[in-house]
Length: 391
Figure 1 (cartoon, one colour):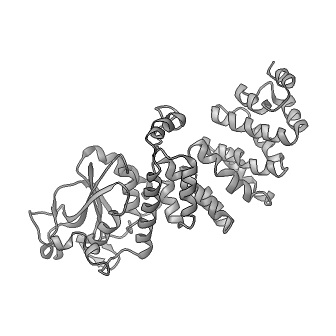
Figure 2 (cartoon, rainbow, N blue to C red):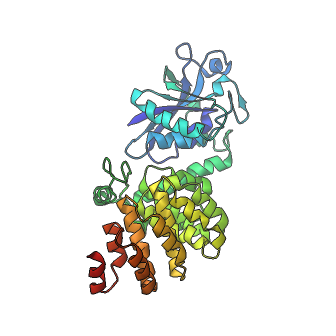
């Protein structure tokens, strides 16, 4: 178990909000970082004690990371507001993140910088080591559980985010398999220096993730965005499958959302199960918008380059091959094995529809194609033809 201390305005609402997340074991409201011992609420209320209303969050780091807790916390506050959250004003309502373990500083700083990058103005959120914490009076503990109609400075949308996000992550975890927890990290190369370094797995198979995504197909974009920021692979996959479910209702909005959240699409299955069915499908009857693919193909991020070429799978299935072949030429000398496989795979799909077109491309490029790319591209060709290219 670990602890982090979060000040987000009135501690009634912040406690109720944070207590809902999967992996949070216990919450306790209190007063932090003041200038004397054992303060009372009446003393803190005067705004002369230096204390801030704060929530001590005890959590299981094997279920939820400190980074995730910090990210969802930032969703509950106005990070630019000084000494005010909602209608509550005063220094006791200032915002902050305080750690009691020096090793936690890096995680807090990481998320702080992520949030700061979205604003031109400096954040008004304190961060630093906890100086002191004193539990508040009993009637403040779990106040909104005891008083469901009681005052809360948080919006209904914010509280619904916590509820729905927690429902999805909890349901995903209910499908967890201990054996898959061991197998999946190896399969997706999560070791040091590997393409999936640091990725974490609950141990949930794709059919189960699909089931959860269908159940929560109406999740808000805030919830989907939160899932895409998760350290858990299955949460990010579920978010993308939810977007697939929502695509038919609002394709323009979903595509824009998808393209602005590619940071969370960072493993090959996440790309392959989303790119053709969202971006690829969108571009079927929008040839003038296909410059998006070429912009992605020039990206410094390998996963975005993979999105570019794999998106064309939907074009290929509808008899449109030009963009695949042009992207294959652009990506012909890719150094990463996953890109070589992706390009070869799309060329193979072209060949299944139009073998002479594939062979024309190969005749021009096979001598300089990486071996893996070539092998994938020729896999469905007759044996003697394959051998002629391999020689």
